[in-house]
Length: 197
Ligand code: SF4
Image: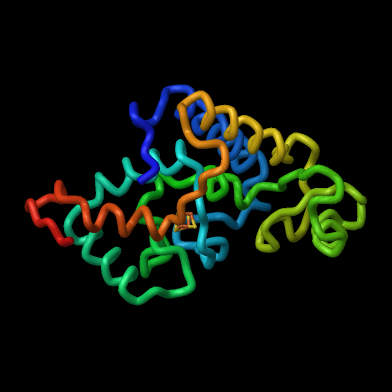
């Protein structure tokens, strides 16, 4: 287990709030260009891993699941599908309030350092501007994002690495979301006192 001794530090919660505020701001200014909505799961057909401080936040979300949500999560774990284990049948995220930063930023136009994105991606989505920017193809289909709409992904990554380090997380350890769900499944403190090991 890769838990942080003191749970999720306030500094990391502040980073999450900051990213969420940026996303809300873009969404309010560019409402007609943002297709992101509850139930859209186009960016959830993945198997993600997270660093220690994000794993601690996801554990918080897991701890708050009710019995029905846990039953559905168990079924998805058993099915071992290709989508994220937290993706509910109706397209919602089971741990939405605790989801990783990559999920919180996925619909936004993201700027990466030059050379880190495939040229095809920047040409297709950056409208040939040459800027290393990409975004969900469901968003900004009519008008390109403005400079204020673009999130510096490398900066967010750097702030997350700092947050993880300051929280005492291992600098390189990554934990699969499915493994966090399995870990919680076998927790002896699960409601009902059922130790499923
Ligand atoms: S954690 Fe939630 S938002 Fe992120 S990929 Fe999984 S289901 Fe989607």
